[in-house]
Image (cartoon, rainbow over all chains, first blue to last red):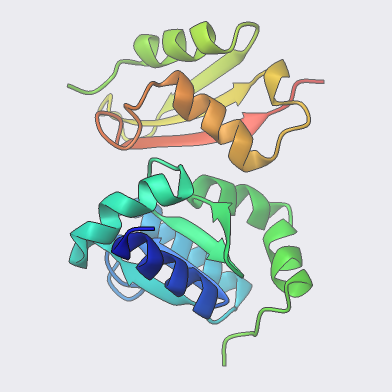
Length: 109
Length: 77
């Protein structure tokens, strides 16, 4: 495994919820990332975010790591959940909240 | 160059015969699209796998030429 892949896998293993995004939760730099942040805020879980615009290595590598072509990307307990469209579909169906409960993810303080 | 609606639809239909594709121009600029794709091939697949079929149909243009495509997948009844 290359260094960047082990950095990514450390990130998704050591944090319950990780959002790879463009920008930060306070200042998202893309509409899709902004939507992903809004969904996680609604679900009310604590999460780690990774700004891929500040890390070109991760920005490229995350696409092959997840086999997914776009950003944002959501990981829960080390598993790839999807991008912002899937997050929205799951949120609207109540499935994202369910997933967080099932996986025992801690609520935001 | 952004992909046209016709090109997006044609690429999806070629890869997923029997699918129906509904495209909405989100910003009126011919560049930000929402696609609802209903395809029998989606049956039994996870959402991630369904979306991957759509991305594969677009042959690597997703995330590049096609920055803004919102995808919703549906399994037809």
